[in-house]
Length: 66
Image (tube, rainbow, N blue to C red; front, side, top):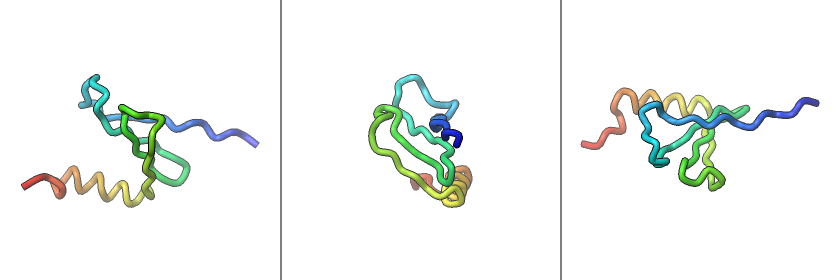
């Protein structure tokens, strides 16, 4: 049986080097989210379809502050 490789965590190309970012990773069935300042800390996992809807809403401004 082959081993599952560890997730590859990514952050926005617009992020600065200040380590104050959200990182995401594609997991076998979900999308993982973590705080770049605490990579060993808690992580969240969202179903891929839920994450895609959220990302689309962010792109269209649905979550912008008034």
